[in-house]
Image (tube, rainbow, N blue to C red):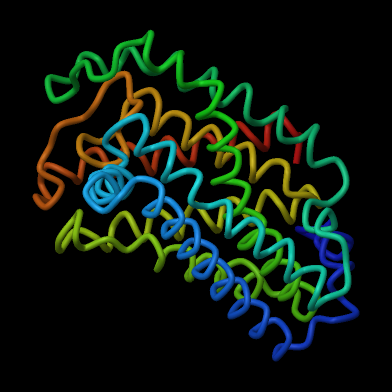
Length: 292
């Protein structure tokens, strides 16, 4: 069997894996996330006042300042709380069952070498004339004690929802990857569709996110826990947020930024191809480290 650990990973969902219950769970997560974010933003507005809140919100949406990026990452906390609540209230199981056995060890075995690979490859990016200095190293290091835990919140929320909750709920009902891998990844990709940033090119980053979701699901099913997917996601976002970012797009703590017209297919294409290649290499390296 290609995925010998899929059954054991999905087993905790088996008792309450009805389609109606899963659909209700997805709606519940979305509603609680939206409500939690709404309450948090209103509380922030009450503290800051209208003018300062408007400035802070702009920085948060673009992630163009250290504070804005930190707030953007922190905005995933309500999603994390929502999936934890729904797993317990609707399915009667502990949220840790979304992780699987051995997730912590696999996270470290994947994240550490992939971050190391990103650091080794970063000097190659500096030969690109479209890449320039951005945030001072001292500033990035100063924000790391806050930014790294918030990054863990962001990737943890997405992985628990898509490769934890949805993969388990669907995997408990069907063994076909078209169900437990492709469907959640298609939703994951659709949520990364951003025509306001990429114009007509927005389909390509969304397809990248879809492919990433499939590879993360593949690692989860191969290992029987969420650790490898969390490690892959953490390392990928670490490189994109803190090493070489995209100018004007979540670059508030990027050491360097790539300055291109993201609406120009000719300008964006080579970099997207590079990102697809790096993603594939990272997936293969993760499998090598875990021997799966």
